[in-house]
Amino acid sequence: MAVAGGDALLELRSVGVTYGRLRALHDVSLRIGSGELVGIIGPNGAGKSTLVDVIAGRTRASRGEVRLDGVALRGLPPFRIARMGIARTFQIGQPFGDASVLDSVVIGALASADDLRAARAFAREMLEAVDLAGRAGEAAERLDVGQRKRLQLAQALAMRPRLLLLDEIMAGLPPAEIDALVALVARLNASGITVVVVEHVMRAIAALARRTVVLHHGELIADDPPEAVFRDPAVMRAYLGPRFQATFGAPR
Ligand code: ADP
Ligand code: MG
Image 1 (tube, rainbow, N blue to C red):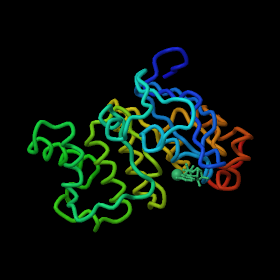
Image 2 (cartoon, helix red, strand yellow; image 1 turned 180 degrees about the horizontal axis):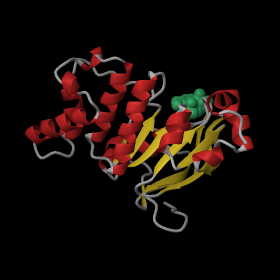
Image 3 (cartoon, rainbow, N blue to C red; image 1 turned 90 degrees about the vertical axis):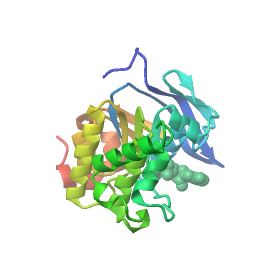
C-alpha cells in the first residue's frame, strides 16, 4: 500500500525527541497507510520505544509533529489518543495489581462499550482472540511472560484500535509462542487493523511486514521491504551483522 501521495493514517513529520543532550529521535518522517503492517527494527537504544511513545502520546516530541488521519496529536494525553484509535503494548510490562485477567481487559473495553455487560462480553471475546479465555478468572499477576504479552494485546484490542503499536511482544518467547503470535498479528492486520511491529525477532518481521523501517541512533536509515532491508549494507553494519547471518545466511 503506497502512501507516497495519498492520505496516510499515521504521519510523522520531522519528529525529534531529545533527553538532555541525547537525541533519542532525530528528524524522523514516516507515513503509514490504512491497512499496512510495518516492521520497525534497530539496535538497542535506537529509539524504537521512543517512537512508539511519541505516537501514543506518552512522550512529547521536542520537534516535528504526529498526525492521525490528518489531525495533529500534539499535546493530547495518551487516553485521548487511545480514544482516537491508537492502542499500544509496553516493552516493559506494566503491573496488573490484583485485577483478574478478565477485569484487566474490561477496564479498556469500558471506553468503547455501552455498559458493563457489553464491556465484559467484548473483553471475553478479546481474551478468546489471544487464547487466554481459559485464564479469565485468575489473577493477572500469575500469568507467565508470554501470557502477559497476550494479555496486553487483549487490553490494546479492547480499545478497538485502528492502529496497533506492538513493542517487542515476542522478545524472549519460545519459538512455538512466537509462531502463534505471528499468526495472530497477521489475522488482526487482515481484519483491518493497521499494525506497527517493533521486533528483534527477524523471522517474525520477515513473515509479517511488507515494509520495514530501520532506526539507528534515533535516525531512520531505511524504509523498504524486508528482503531489501536485509540486504542493505548500511543496515547490516548498523545492526544485523552476525546475528542476521546466523539466521538467514550471508546476503547475496
Ligand atoms: P530502543 O527501544 O530502540 O531500544 P529507546 O527508544 O528505548 O530505544 O531509547 C532510545 C534512547 O533514548 C536510549 O539511549 C535511551 O537510553 C534513551 N531514553 C529513552 N527514554 C529516556 C528517558 N525517559 N530519559 C532519558 N533517556 C531516555
Ligand atoms: Mg525498546
